[in-house]
Image 1 (cartoon, helix red, strand yellow):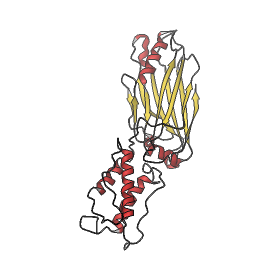
Image 2: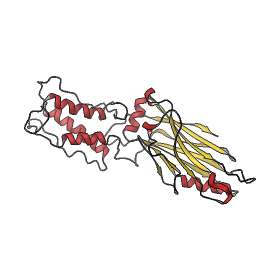
Image 3: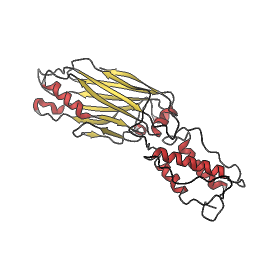
Image 4: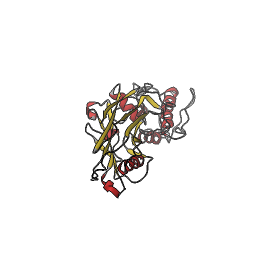
Length: 305
């Protein structure tokens, strides 16, 4: 029979709960799985008794999932039974498992998580340029699963452009202002967002998360200059992201790119004076309720031209 008030706890019911929890807590697959090793065991025979200890372990895992996913670590609100006590029907059990599944990619520590491993890098172009500058940094994980766990547990990557002494002519000053306005691009598991900056993005691909990327550059965000003088409204900054291979081939590398595109027809006032820099950092999930299963990841400059 199906798990219900007044009935027995059957092995098939318990094993179904365990399978749902383990799919998120354990190895899982695709965008499910935190990589935790403390997965639950099933009851092996239909006639076996589901013990209070097994029931307590199940609830503990649900609480860990909900603590990780919710601000303040609110848990599931379900109390674990004690050995020797009668196991009563829990009306919210199925609901809490469904909620944990729906919120599997959330992380309560979001925004305050520490950098994981050597997860910070920057790239700068040479001083003086006229048409375009491309800056790119890659991050490599030790395995495809570790990369998957990083994003599944709520990790993300930030990257932004900063400028150093972009002065000397009106174009350079305009690029300096646009660089500040562009802000930071954030790549999460299944979404992207602009953090900080100002102005309005002309392209805002909020669906460009890790699980949406391919081995070809995806345009994440683009913002144009708003300065009409000098024709600078045709100049823009773009952020891109891609993987080393498609998801079906188990990627281990993510590439983060910023492109400064100078299309202004401004005659002799054409050389940008100063240096543009791409700054990146990876932020892993907090480890209050889960263990670090993503390991370390290493950043490297791939393009600085």
